[in-house]
Length: 362
Image (cartoon, rainbow, N blue to C red; front, side):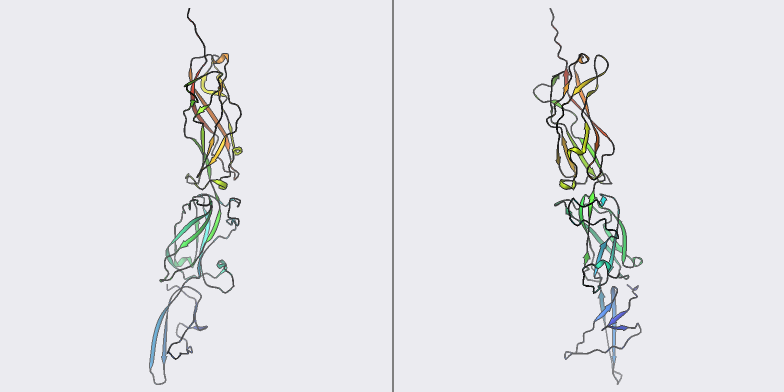
């Protein structure tokens, strides 16, 4: 572009826009090598002219392309750094939450390191449709997620440095990089950035089945008779990003949720049925230990092995009815402090309940 203002050096000699005399040494093939230095980027046309004492003139020109040494992704803060590249890294951002990200085109600098972040910026850099990518590093075989900003354009106003608000839809640790198109036909190297750990925005729960039967051959049980349910009541805990999308990388060590992190209350009375005294029928559920299985973005919380019992009392001498119970989830909070939006009630129906009276006609 024509916006470049950096000086041009040929053979370490400053070249004036109006022309500068430079000594050139030709070899026996009639060729001479010139070195150029331009502390910016762009396509430069170099014109040369030689005139001898007789007035004979030789002219030539050549276009020279200077590309950035690298396009560098970086952040001014260090809270994105995750040196161990695992779930033990501290929290960075919630999945889907925006964060600052900077990109700059830099010059080469002789400082004997691979840290291009402190290299000078090339203010003349302009290029459109630079694709931005995210690649998951951990958990292994996880989803790469989706970036809110997928392409970046550098205009003259950016002066070689771009600041954007970015977000990533998934949980985990990622490498952010760029895939720039050719710059005047030349490839540009990229210095990527590792960011993490991303974690969910919220948790939610669902129950896939709300209708259960008593385990066994009968479709009813008697008051006072312990019974289990088939299938086992199963609660699914799901992790979401800020856009209410499931974060499938919430699994293994990146899902810091255990059975002890789920606080719930088992039913003590039927939800609807009243007894002879007008009070709810009482239920006894002995203590047991539920199980928790991790999957992609969700965790299955199973009440396997639980037994339920409608107490056989004078209050329960009523006509047969269909049981209905509620498990109240008081709090689900993982070790990152991510919770469900509010306490949740999971209501489900069970078998028919008979008091078991016997009537004999004479």
